[in-house]
Image (tube, rainbow, N blue to C red):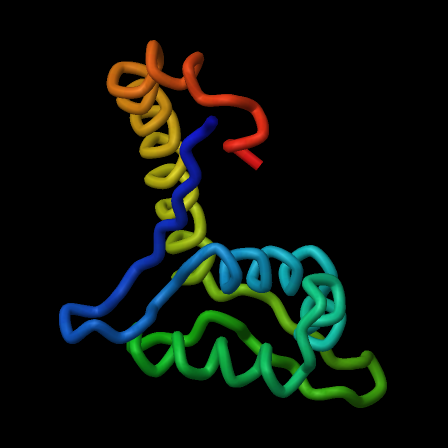
Length: 122
């Protein structure tokens, strides 16, 4: 038995801001240099990826992706400085929480998990 958790950020009104899926998309866009390639890397359709980022940008109040039109040099996308800071802060926050949750889980369930049959955990 193990603990699993997902963390996402919401606005004060409950609107979605950032979660694991959008984080993966942002990192893929930054790594691959375009929204289209980033969406493909995380197995999202371009329209779905665009809508997800657009919704997050509206809720956050700042752009996450700087888009450059095509042309002679080609187009592409990079993360804005604000997006890079948001990604870094989110990653640091979640990393620390996962460690704390694991410690808490072992404190509460440590001796009990040995009693759970392997089949029950599947």
